[in-house]
Length: 358
Ligand SMILES: *Cc1c(COP(=O)(O)O)cnc(C)c1O
Image (cartoon, rainbow, N blue to C red):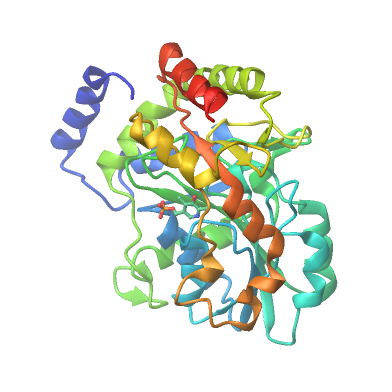
C-alpha cells in the first residue's frame, strides 16, 4: 500500500471540491494517466470489473452465444448470463491455460456473436489466431483482461487486441482502487457509448439513450488509483524478485512445475501458479491444507471450473468430457502467495514447506 500520509492531501482536495463522483477531477485524471501508462488510446473507468464486463457486452450489443473459457473467475461467464447470453465453453491450451484457439471454430454456431477469452495470469491469449477466426466468421472479441494490467506483447499493449478489453482493479489485483475496473476501447465513439451506459444511459440532462447501469468509479477510488500508479513500478519490481526466487528454488522438486509465461510478453507477476502432479508426495489439496495449517494462504485459482457450477453445468458445452485439459489444470493448480511486501523469510518458509513435504 502507498503511504497513508500521501493519500490525505488527495482526500482534502475531494472534501474541498465537494465533487464526490460523476466524472470528477480525479476520475478524469486517472483515465488519462492510465491510458498513458498502459499505452492505449481510450479507457473508461468503472466501479468494478464485473460491471465493466457486463457493460462491454452491452456496448457492442452482443447476444445469442459467446465462446468462452471455463478456466476463469466466475465473473467472466456471469457477465454473459447478466446479458441473457448463452456461454459456450471451449477447452484450454494446457501450456498457456488460455482458451485453445484451435478448438474455437468447432464451437461456432449460427447464434455465435462473440468470443470472450481471458488472458489468464496476464499471459496473452493467441490473439492473432483468435482475431483471424473472428474476422472470418464476423465475430466480436472481448477480452477479460482482469489479470493483464500493463502487459505488453510483441512491443505493444496487449490491451489493444480485440474489440474491447476489460480490466479489474479489485483489491487483489496488481493495480487496485479497492474496487474498480475499466474498459479499453479503440475510438472516441465507442468510449462515448460506454460512458453513457455506465451512467444510466444519460447522454445529456434530459436524454436517456439506453437502459444503462450505475457503473461509475467515485472520486476516492480514482484518487487512490492516481496515488497507487506512482508506486506501481516499484511494486511490480518487488513482485518480480519474489517470482525469481520461487522459480529458482522450486525448480527440480519432483511433481512441482511452475507456470511458464509467454516469452513474447512482459509480465506483471500478479500470480505464481504451480502445478502439483502425481509424482509429488502430497495431493494438491493436501499441500493447500498443509500450507494453511502453517498460516499460509495459497489459492486454488481457478478451481472449481466455472462449467461445474450449478448455473452452468447443465449446458451442453459444460460436459466434463469436453473440457478435460481445463479439468486437469484446475485439479493441479495452486497459486502461491506473491505480493510486494512478502518478506524474504516468509517466502523461504513457504518454499521449505513445499520442498520438504512428504
Ligand atoms: C477479478 C476478476 C474479475 C472480476 O473483477 P471485479 O473487479 O472483482 O469485479 C473478472 N475476471 C477475472 C478473470 C478476474 O480475475
